[in-house]
Amino acid sequence: MRLSTGKARVVGVGEGRASLHMERPSRSARAARKCQSSRTIAALSFSLVGVGACQDPISPHDPGNPYATEALTVDASYNATNLGTLPGGGDSFGEDINVHGHVAGIATDSAGNSHAVVWIGTTLTDLGVPFGTRSAAFGINDSQAVVGHSTDGISRYGVIWKNGGHTLFSGASSPHMVDAMAINNSDVVTGYHLAGGTSIHAYRYSAGGGFVDIHPSSYAQSVGLGVNDAGVIVGYVQLADGSTHAAQWNSANTFYDLGTLGGLIGRAEAVNASGTIVGESAEANGRLSPFSWRSATGMVGSGLGGYALDLSNAGRAVGYKPLPNRHAAATGKNVANVLTLPSLSAGTNSYAIGVNTCGHIAGIAGIAGGAYRAVRWTILTCD
Image 1 (cartoon, helix red, strand yellow):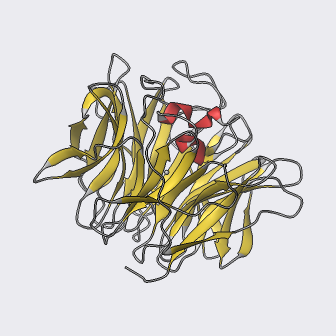
Image 2 (tube, helix red, strand yellow; image 1 turned 90 degrees about the vertical axis):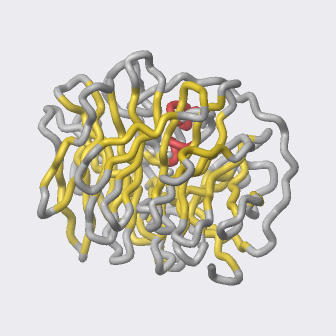
């Protein structure tokens, strides 16, 4: 649920969250993969602070790809399952996974339009397009409430799909531009919206509390990416100079700047039940490194290049390594060792984006011919 209880970007195709995580050392470049991915903050279809299609709404400084090649050791305790796509469709993308192993994500139809979908086992359910021509799902909770967006290419509404129906919600701007990136088990949602027609702001949304802009006024822009069951939201903020810092908001919407590892990029991706936060940050030398943050220690880098996109309540982190190809990776439970996950096809990119309490993982992997498929990686022994 990227609420990170155990718990990351096609859509045109760059409206997915995986685009957010693809092909780039910074979220603003995950869409470099021909914008073919899905968990991306999104490919806003309007011009905004220099952000074009297939990019994040906030474009932090991008240091290129200064990563040393690291050894690949495949984690034999995991099995990879290709979850398939819509009939006649092209790609599919797994964006999040709940405690039951249900995966929410995106699949393209025969016309190339993206649809929000859910996989239960390997059975795909199309959640439909409640507004416009395309939709995408980025988060799912344990009650199978799913969040994402639906768009006509001009306006974009946040969507909650639940109990066979859906709810559209938006901020105050016109045209409406809202993306819902994560949901917790109390149906609290976070993401970002276009505020005043000029800048991206993080928000908190719930049926009881309505839509609340939580942007800190001293920053240029902000994005919410994860929320835990205590209502703690994490994401990032952009400073006036274009750099970004990892960010946290408590349940009362009090903001905390978590900073960086010394470089110009910081993004908090997920927070688990204990309040541990993971994300990625640039070190002083420009290399992006996964980090963990705890109140007792502050931000601590892993010493390895890569991205941490989600964290389970058991302490298992997932993401990917930016080697010659991108390789989905996961740590052990409460252990710093990092192992790559089995691929669907040799030599193709893969991305681990969501993890549940048991340690099962949702993500994306390339297949022969250049297409991408949603993947569920299942662990042999539950955490």
